[in-house]
Length: 451
Picture 1 (tube, one colour):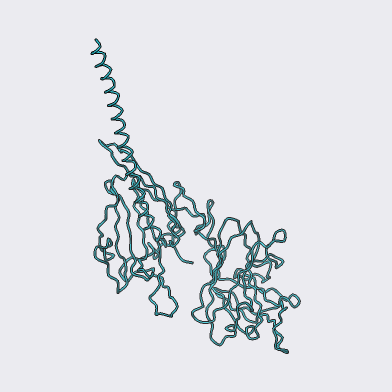
Picture 2: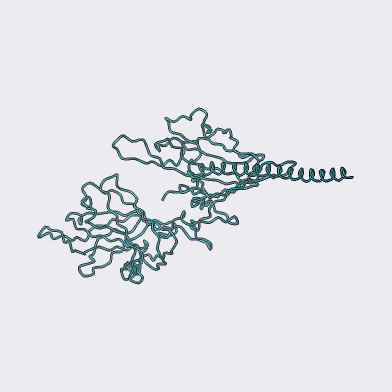
């Protein structure tokens, strides 16, 4: 009887211990599978981030001679007979189908992502434009790459994963097995090409895709604001007759001189040119990024504006209310002017761009240029302001909303992609097994047009 009781107790202990060992082993295997799946997913996400972060890169430093200035070129198109390179479909005959983005997402059970970008050497010089494709086949995540265009002196290294030639079919590389989810979502910009209920229009002035504008001179106001001469409106406007603070009789600078010209930006229409009522009224919102830009061409080496002295002579652009004052609240200036200077040679001509935000809402202000010269010759010079634009910056505000879709023309304003990835390990008999999940957001600042 004692032996039977002993054997029964031992049997119970063995069964319990065996079950505990079995459960422990299963838990260990599940934990290992989960760790493997998570590690694999994180590794894939890291490679994906490295790929996508350079999406749309289009500027490269050309090789330069020692001592020369760096010269940057944009590579946006392919040679004859090939598809347009950095941009997906910029030459579509249908204006509503023009695609100036550098990505394409085909949605499905698994998404298919295609991106385009520049390949650089270690010094930042252009080598090629390549197209990278991420997709899933039979739960295997694959990555392929091919060169759409390349520099004449560039040859793909032996063993490079990219194939040479836009017409070629690249051999894919297996990135990960057991993929249960591969979804890519664009960051939906709150700033888009056309205004609608849930977002705002990118271009603030000129609106509707126009390029022409006027500069309205503020009339004489004692000896402070003095009249100037401005050409008729258009996509470019030339200004002459600058206010001068110089005593020619005694040949000295008037250090306390305050004479200036004020020019207010207005639509290019036939309405009466009244500086503070016909200028374009602008409203700004907090937590929004804006860009004011214009192009300044180099006029000539003999133009007196070449004598402009930074720190002494004054050229600025900013915003004014109907009384000609900067926007203020409680005696505090909400938005200061931006200084700029004219091109002094053909290498310094080009775009002047000022990005800014405001601490609180500002209403009904106008873009205003201010000129005041202290060097004796500069007042006889001239400057040209062309392609003046005020816009909301698309990349500064976006959201991820899986219920919203984008028009093709607005893909250029996408500045981030989000990846949702799930990889499984240890599944048997059709079961998924343990999974590792990763969600990452990758900023893509180079996607779209460069303003």
